[in-house]
Length: 416
View 1 (cartoon, rainbow, N blue to C red):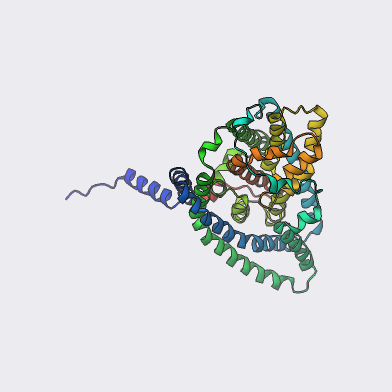
View 2 (spheres, rainbow, N blue to C red; view 1 turned 30 degrees about the vertical axis):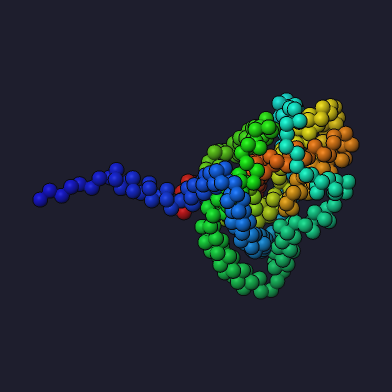
């Protein structure tokens, strides 16, 4: 009796098929496509899906506070060197300021060269920008920024607790308890992330259903410029920084592809905050660096937002044929270096920052914001994705400079 030899190719096909259908990235991508189709062909039902995206982000937000707190407290108490904590903080803030300024400069340069605002504004849809222009005259307040930023509040509390724990007599026992709690929290997050496709579907269906793909056509030039600038920043600026440390930007993007798709679907970089912290630790970054850099970066290292804000200022100036001198363009960058820090953690804050920046210049009509409202939602994905990549790179670089980075094979880690 002849027994047929096993067919290795059929096993390979089964294994490939199994790996695909059990991959979260695959289902998030399918959900995004399904959301686009529903929003486009049935806008009313697409808009109704908003609650799915919102509920998922709310669910993820429950984990943000505990994960930031536990990661930082365990990181600082495990470090045993408070000077190192201060050094990491100073390095991170210096890096954020330099890279964010580069992002602002690139946004201004691309907008100046390609002139996306040189179009007929008569055919553009006008939104109601009054809710953002009302508070435009108010000066930027660091106290208000802190009080409205939950991530920063948790960060400060965790740093204080982490430092205090170093001087506590029962430090070891407390750390053991916190480590057990941390395992429970991260296990809970793991199961919640299985709902990511539902959140991505809801977010994308709502965006397309509410604003429609047709709204992209009149401001297509601006959209193209924004996405082009974000790509230049990621691949040229961040890619060059990583290349100096012999790391490929493409390997990093492949490693965090799940988080990138999640952000694309939900239009929120916060949706990926807990899982990106987990991945960076698995990748080889130390707990202390991840805990300090990522939460701080979510408030101070908004590269995508910086690019968008600088381009929007020039877009509105060009729309109204307002000529800006070289000194005034430098002033735009200088003002945004401060005001852009207030664009974190509050819905619509980007427009408030834009309004306050335009008011400070006393030359560009604040009413120009109304032309951006219809297309802003489609650019929020690019902003959020660039912000996420920027903070991922920042964490790796700070870990590298601190020699706290364990070289690992990214593909093998991502398969775990």
